[in-house]
Length: 225
Image 1 (cartoon, rainbow, N blue to C red):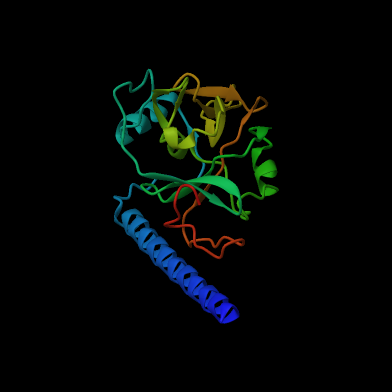
Image 2: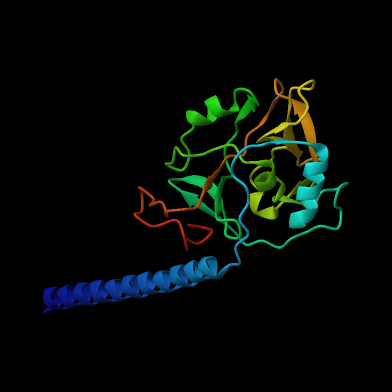
């Protein structure tokens, strides 16, 4: 009788475990769908992704056009965007729902402007290889009033870059310079293409990637996934 009782107990415990697993999976699916709907319903603001050569006045017009924050050019600017911080293949990324972009958030990479594209071509992060250098529009969208010493959106709390390259060049042949965002000063500035600054890479959200470890799609994953 004792053996039979133990067997029944094990079967019952297994049943409860399966029920809990099913409930947990169902709840996870509900949460995932809710976040997926939230991302899909987010108002979209497309940003330029093709590099250009820009003047200082064009930079100022761009900042004011989109209502971006810039400590000197547009100190009252502060747009509210929807971000999700999550992991893909073990790497930290930030999904920008408003602009349909995915950002690297845990990559520590430096390069000169003239070598940036070569460096990015070899980068593999979050299981993906189609990263690129952001335009100044895309990069400037991350500027916010100072947060813990950096003028960078709180979703990027794990990225401590102070000055970051954009893909755009300065429209002045004599300077041979590119545009950077100074997250330590809340500014958009010019820098020699030979200087080394950090890289914050981006890709279009596009088709949702699948995590090779879990088989889950990127969209709708919780922050602590």
